[in-house]
Amino acid sequence: MSLTALTTNQDLDPQRLREAFGAFPSGVVAVAAEVDGRLIGLAASSFTSVSLEPALVSFSVANGSKTWPDLRRATRLGLTVLADHHGGVCRQLAGDVEHRFDGLQVTTTEDGATTLDDGLARFDCSLYREVEAGDHTIVLLELHAVESVVAAGADGPLVFHRSTFGRLAASA
Image (cartoon, rainbow, N blue to C red; front, side, top):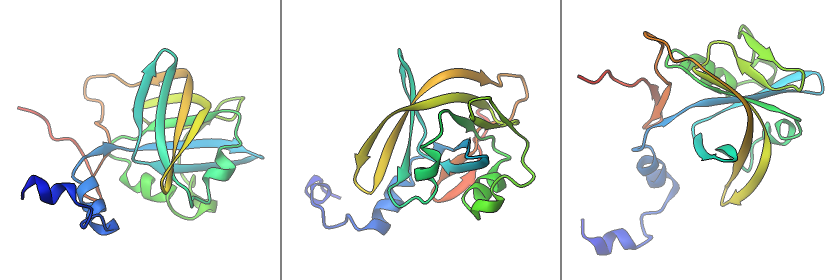
């Protein structure tokens, strides 16, 4: 493929973009809180660290999300880095709103931040800023507390790659 072919936009249809974007693996997080007495949450595969000072992370959410308008009203948000055994949990968090937390062990702070008890890392956050970006919104979160599991034999992260969930392979 020549560079000229790469600089045209003839191949920017959504399916081709999904395939190309899917070539880059990403971790998956659960974002959750208690809002108006009920647990609300979603899964996001666009998590990234942003800044150490101030401590910021981000994820992206589709502008058409039915969950984000309620979740963004929370005083505090819990963010959990999902482990490689959480593929089913991720699908559950993307499913029926009334059953997203069925059978899941969670902890909710006094401020409403909700995290999964068996995540690899858990963050207590608040909304810092939202940036509209095409059909998604980039959500910047300020961190207030962090807990991570760094133990020998601990699970690896859940990886989203080429539209499927997987795990990292051990390096030789």
